[in-house]
Image (cartoon, rainbow, N blue to C red; front, side, top):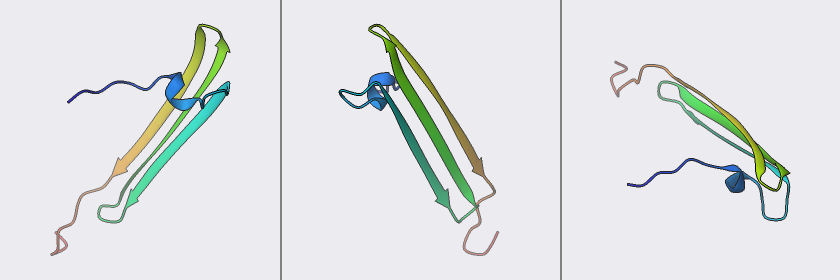
Length: 67
């Protein structure tokens, strides 16, 4: 398996100078959820600013018996 980190070009659409990406998910068993937000801008020919954050919360999983 190969993984790589995101960079500003993953967030900024071609021809634009800035971009944002948001994602989230919620699950009822637990409950659990997460949200993430990434933002990037090009401030020069060789300079990009990139910031992001993620929040995740999960409670105990419950089986079919409620345990």
